[in-house]
Image 1 (cartoon, rainbow, N blue to C red):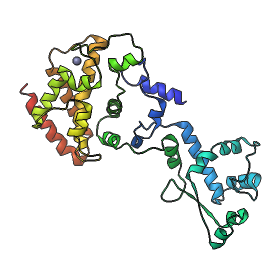
Image 2 (image 1 turned 135 degrees about the horizontal axis):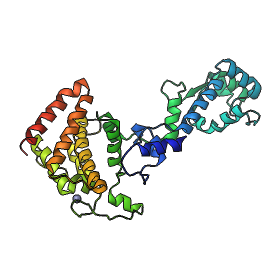
Image 3 (image 1 turned 180 degrees about the vertical axis):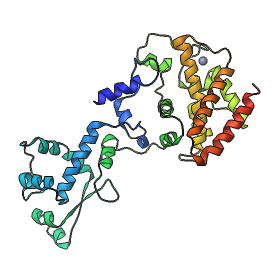
Image 4 (image 1 turned 30 degrees about the vertical axis):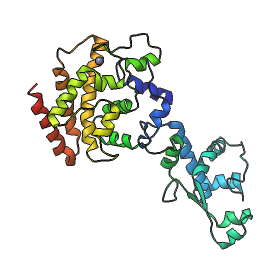
Length: 325
Ligand SMILES: [Zn+2]
């Protein structure tokens, strides 16, 4: 099923789908951890099964849980009992025990149980099992799922990207830009692509920074942005754009700047693909500027009420300069 999802994803974006630029792990990693946030069904399954384990340990009493407890555990706790392979369901539960253990915490019940730490039976009676992956101490499938797919730290720059009000397809495109997964010829070459490595527009090596910042057509578009917004310079690379044009992570203005970048980079990317794959070449770089503006104007309707005015102001400035070209 997951393979089918990955395939679907690939058929849904771009024109030439010969090369997988994203590993499945990256697709299923939650967005705030720098992934694309698609559901990993195996991890979700584990997280849902672990809910039963928590229920059993917490003394929850539903018919199913009572049955499982009586049939398989008796007086023992979940971690004392050796797994039996007599029930398909129980075998499944035991398989997820290790994952479950990462979030499982034990709160000591009373003084007696600490004194008799070694007394397993007493512990069983008085200790409370809690869930460490949630502040509430209550089990949630979501928290274990996230832990399984990525126990790492939050990717704040991507949070800014996901908060930018552009269509999801464009958010994914931005994610690919930030992770250098866009299929530039330099990237394709790494995958033994037979074509030539140079930019079809200017003949330079085509890597990500070339395509979106250094290529003469990209320069032309960025100069339009610079003149519209009164910038003193234009970004020379993605790193430069991040350092000098975006604020700290979560900065309010970042959304608008990323919104702008989305329009520019998407227009450049589409123009480049028309030329590389369909031999359609723009007659003048002006056309790319018009294209970028068109995208931004179209996406403007997605902006939140609060951000609408600022987005419209940006468009007005860009449009004023556009008419001078
Ligand atoms: Zn070029």
